[in-house]
Length: 135
Length: 135
DNA sequence: CGGCATCCCGTTGGATACTG
DNA sequence: CAGTATCCAACGGGATGCCG
Image (cartoon, rainbow over all chains, first blue to last red; front, side, top):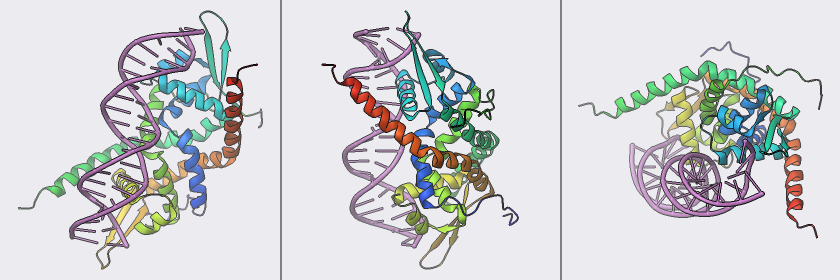
């Protein structure tokens, strides 16, 4: 398998580093979080606009996610005391840097989604085949 | 926190892209997955070695994670039919590229972990304070 | 040693209904 | 419109025990 591939920083990511990453990813790498941060990457949005863009998310999850992002300092919440009320959410600078860090992963996901899906289907088929008695 | 930060591609990441990302992240951005991929970044390891490095993981989770990574084509499993048996796991090239895509996120996590933790503590305190009746 | 199967419980998260 | 509150089903994930 390609001995000539040295683009991986080989040494970084010790066990301690991994836990650090995992700890943050547990909050930040969650499905809805990613979607919401992605939705907000183009500018501030109202509550309902976010929900419309991140199709499939429930109010519950949207609210919880936004609340966590807000307390983490990744988005800001702006309330306009009008009637009907209006609330805008926007990425902070920290949120912007997060989105920046997410881009390579997004690129990777986009590039390899099909490969992974194919792999999964293929091996699933193999697994089934191997279960069939030889007879 | 550098106000002069414009490196965000602003337009990318439409709703469809987000779902794509989320779909992959659901599998790949999971806590144990990250830890295991990180542990394997320095070369192949035996089952028990991985378990020792990723302290806290149960056999169940380690096995499930490795199986998924294997069917996704991110790690290879090599069985040495000796007694006692020996099994080595190693990142494939796809796995290496995944780890590469994870690095920026890792860097971000390392750089901002403290800030986020502080933010959380601070707002949690504020939230408590706001709940106390005025009197 | 390297798993797989089972039990079991805590958390996640959707659906629904109500409020300011 | 922008949430909050409650109920409940599904899933994640630890502990334990057995097998090749």
